[in-house]
Every structure is written in C-alpha cells, then in structure tokens.
Length: 315
Ligand code: DGL
Image (cartoon, rainbow, N blue to C red; front, side, top):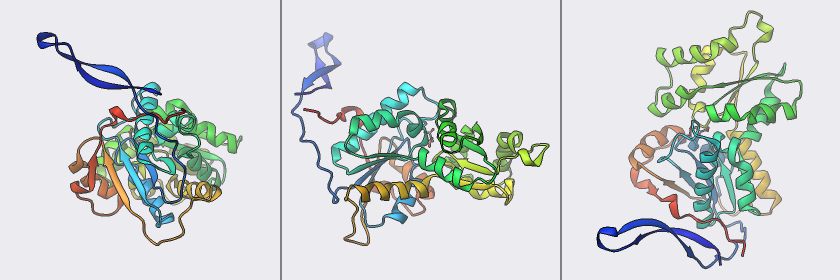
C-alpha cells in the first residue's frame, strides 16, 4: 500500500504540536479512461479561463473541471522546482476527482512541468498549451521572425524558443518576459494610455527596428493572461504583425487526443463546467468573468485544499 503524509496533532499538553506524518492508505483502483468523465483543466489562477473558453467553443458537449491555484499565483516568477511541485499537486486533485484528460492551461506549467505531469499521470493524456502555441506561430509567420511574450520562468526555461525552432530551424525567435501584463489583465486594464505605455516599454526594443525587415512578423501570446490584451496590442503594433495565442490550437489538440483514444463525447450539445480554486472565490468570479467571457458568481467557485491530493497509485 502506498504511503501518504497527513498533518496530525502529536504530543501532549505544552508539547502538543502539528507535524506531517506518513500514513498508509488503501490504493484507489486505476481510473479507466471513459468518455463520460470530465476533462480536467488547471492554471495558476483565472487566466487559464481564456483557454477553457476556447475548449468550450470547440467541445461544447464535454464536462470540464477547471482548477485555478489562486492561492499560489503567480507561477511565472517561481523556481522550476516550485512550479513542478505546484503543478503536480493541482493535477493530482483533478485526477482524484476522475478525469479522462488533463489540460495544462498555464504556459509556465506547460513549459516547466509537462514531462513530470505526463510521467505521473500516464496513461491519462496530458496536453499543454506550449506545443500548440508554437505550432500556431510557425503556421502564421511569413519570414520566420517570431516574438514570444511570456512570464519570466517561461522565457528563462527556453521551451517556447526550442519548440518553435524544432518546427522551423531557420526561425529567429525573440522572447520577452512581460510580468506587468499579468497585473494589468488581472486588474481589468485592457486599454488606455497606461496599458499602451507598458506595451511600448516592453516591445519597442523588439518591434521598432531600424530595418523594417528585421521586425518580427508574428507575436505569440505565451501566457494565459495576454489574450485579453490582444486588441490593444493590435492597435499598438499595427495590422502587419500576426498575433497568435495557443487556446484555439490547444482545443484542436485536445479534440485529436480524445478522438484517438475513442473517448470524445458525441451524445449531447452541452456539458457542465465545475470551477475550483485554492483561494478567493469573490476575486475569482470578478476577474474570471473577464477571461471566460461570461458572468460568474462567487457561489459558482468551490474552494479546495491541494495539500492532501495524492499521486495516482501504481499498486
Ligand atoms: N498562467 C501563467 C502563464 O500562463 C500566468 C500567470 C502566472 O504567472 O502564474 O504563464
């Protein structure tokens, strides 16, 4: 039987304290992947609702369980070890609830933790947003000059750059961390002079090149939050730059994966959406409504604790 840790009271009177204690637990039967199970989607917070929105458009008959790890947002400034640990815990909770597929909506988690997730949850398919985003960029670019905007950890890890040059070895990829974009999007500031000023500060170096031919012709929105800034980015950069995000291509990759395994739902027009978060249902509902593009109430959001989520049993 596998071991797991629980937080327990030990000691007596003045010596009483709480410690993590290993306990043995009965293994759960390995979940069979069946078409009636929901699709698990997780992100560091509410930004991944931009991805959920595209998944709902593409696969309206499926049930979705979305988890936003709002207590630990942002992931994009954390170390790879923390990002991996947080991602595994989030995915474990979804897996415990029973899912037929895991979608890693967070670009940072996709860049840093995808291999660890795929290894732990095999045979459940794990789909990240980074490879579909790289594919969309390579399809959109004319001259192979691509700029990627993402979080610090995604840029530092180099996974987008590698995924693009693997598909298109002659591509010239410039990656730029834009952490303030996350804050602007969360604040609902999606246009106006302050937002434009921040865009100029981050992007002028890349896009205001002396030689027009050296400018990127494609911009990848390599972070869950950035799609809500797409209209203002379009205004600042003009019509010549293709702006791509990974949400729509991830939805296609998900549909492919479900079809290949024979677990795509065909039997109904509309499924359900369950929303989970690790903190702040009010903020989740207020900010999340902008990202999902539909009204949300705090009562729609269930608060969960990831501390006790268990790795799947291999027993
Ligand atoms: N979800 C993250 C991403 O797509 C952005 C927010 C964060 O840093 O956690 O990279």
